[in-house]
Every structure is written in structure tokens, then in C-alpha cells.
Length: 178
Image 1: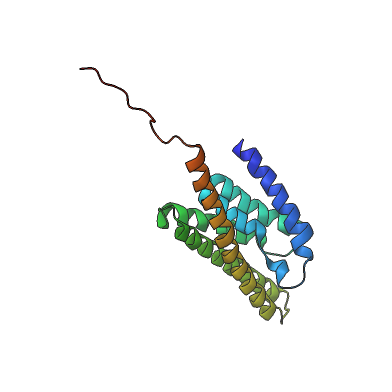
Image 2: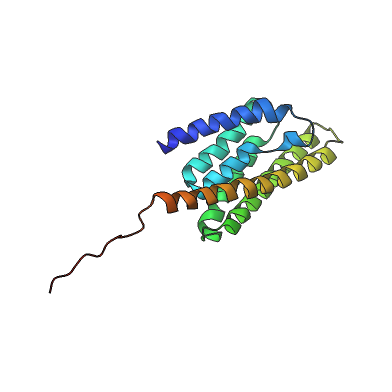
């Protein structure tokens, strides 16, 4: 059931990313909705589903022609995200989630930038490096702020649901006969 819900969420986020966000003007089209959702899913729910989400988002974005280097960057992001969640940020807190988001986003940006710079050098094109760096800064800002906003909302909602629907213990005392 979790995989099915994650798949529906991926399809919905993919449609919003490809149809809506990609058609927005310059700074807003760099909003990485799929990356944000993948990082939150990786941290909050299941590592495997989060990794699959991150790798498939890179594959599909590259297949739709929205850029180059997404597959390599997403694979590296998934690997670094697993390392951060498993070995560095063991405590499940909001600040740890922001640390994972920052580490994953920096990995995504650095790997994709190196890929694009090497690709431009092989094609002997120049002048794209400054636009790559400016778009990377927007992606970093949007990703960390998106995880901050969506992550806070999700953690608060999960805490509320846990208080609302989980057992609070016994409401009565069991008498003990001596």
C-alpha cells in the first residue's frame, strides 16, 4: 500500500513539475519539487522508496528533455542521502532533516554542475557556466526552503495524528485482589 501511495504521489508531483513548474519564468522554474519530495520521503518514510523516487525523478526529467545530468546527479543524491540518514543524522529531528536536505541538495547540484561543465567542455561550448551557477543557487535556495516548509508541515501533521489516534494508555485502573 505504501508503494502504491508513493507511486501516485510521484505521478502527481511529476505532472506538477513537468507541466506547471517547468513552464514558469526563470527563477521559479528551478523549483525542484521532485527532489524535495524525494528527500522528505527518504528521511521520513522508507529509504528504499526514497532512493527509487530520487533515481526515477532524474531519469524521467532527463527523458522529458528538461536538462542533462539529472540521472547521474539523482543517483549520487540517493547514495549520499542514504549515507546521511543511516550514519550521520541518526536522530529524527527537524534540524537533522534540514541537514539531510542540505547535503542531498549540495550533492545534486555539485554532481550535475560537474557533469554539465564537462559536457560543455567536450562540446567546446562556453558561456553556459555562469547560467549553470545561477540556476544552481536558485535550486539550492528553493530545495532547502521547500524542505523547511513541507518538512515542518509533515512533521507537525504526523505528531498531531499520533496524538489524536494513538493509544494514550489505560483510562482505568485494574484492581488487584490480594
